[in-house]
Length: 250
Image 1 (cartoon, helix red, strand yellow):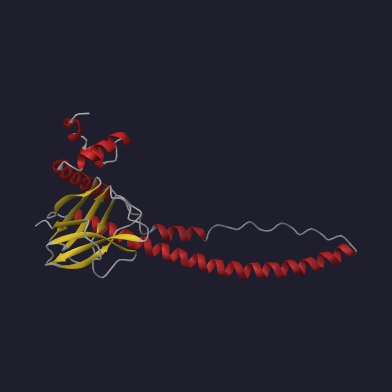
Image 2 (image 1 turned 45 degrees about the vertical axis):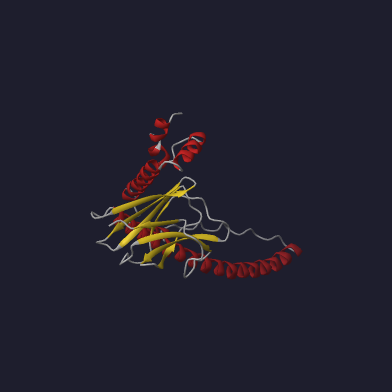
């Protein structure tokens, strides 16, 4: 594989379309080729923008329709009870019926608690879905803003990072591609550089190597942004050297 061939692989790499052997070869080339690193980061950011632009959130009326239809589902009625046999069997059946009633009451109590727990879990899931949908819409708005500008950089080990800034919206999005997962108990944290003072801009998802993150807070007067490795939950101030420190595009 020639160097010219490697220069033509940026698009396939950004879309994760290379087989393992070619991906490893290209990543070694990427570490020493700044133009390819820049182009790969820009292509990864463009792919993220296209993916978000085509996302289709569920219709707001879908939840109400599902809940309304659930009330129309009829439960199958119980069959006719079997007649008990005379004598001791009838007495035993009577005793069993009392035990069955007690068991049903206990089960009903347990199921009542389960229903409450499931309802709370469902409400939590709905709140998380709404927050995720709102974040996706805000990310898409920044990426698609008419004044959006980008700055890309290589993050090492073949990873790339691109920051997209909309001054009109006063918001920024960080797009990462190929980042290794942080060590156990650690997380990647984003920062705004306000004239040498680092301001937290939120955490990245430690389980994802490719992601677009809406940076927390306004861009305001920040001149740069950085990424550090921090303890799980994040830190008030950076506790490690930055993996990347990028000037914000103007």
